[in-house]
Amino acid sequence: MRVYPQITQMGKCSKPGGSLERNVRSEAGKRRASCGRIMERAGSAALGLALCLLSANASAQAPEVGGLLPSGGPRGATTVVKIDGKNLQGAKLYLSGAGVSVRSSQVTPAGDLITVQIQVEPGASLGPHDVRIATAKGVSNGARFWVDVLPNRVFE
Image (cartoon, rainbow, N blue to C red):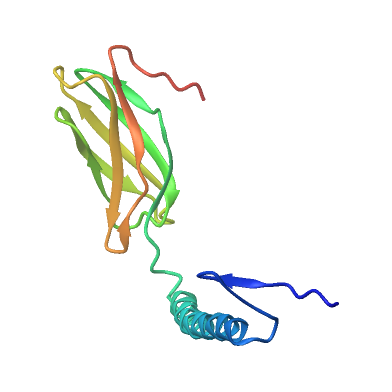
């Protein structure tokens, strides 16, 4: 006597190759085919996106902030800050919070350094203030300028 594995559905049993097994295999095949079509569409969309990104002009990159030195200043004073980064030509500096403003800025011809005078009012809130740089090509990542009661010192 040969024993066949059984497929059970709603109390019915059948041998391998029976109608119930054929139906189950048929449904699984349809799902695989449907998934294959979806993957083909997704693959062509991803390829199109990759080609679009690769063909973008390298000079059209948003500015990047590497760091600020010194990274903060005291209340009631003006601090000269050097901001290191990339793609900073034509930069406009934005600071968050009341009482902190830019008095002047100067970008190097290479566009990799900005020298900024930041004025901190006596009533400015203590702690971090977000710094971002905007150009015609985009907005930079964020950095922090810290307002404190004591001055930051940079030893060169």
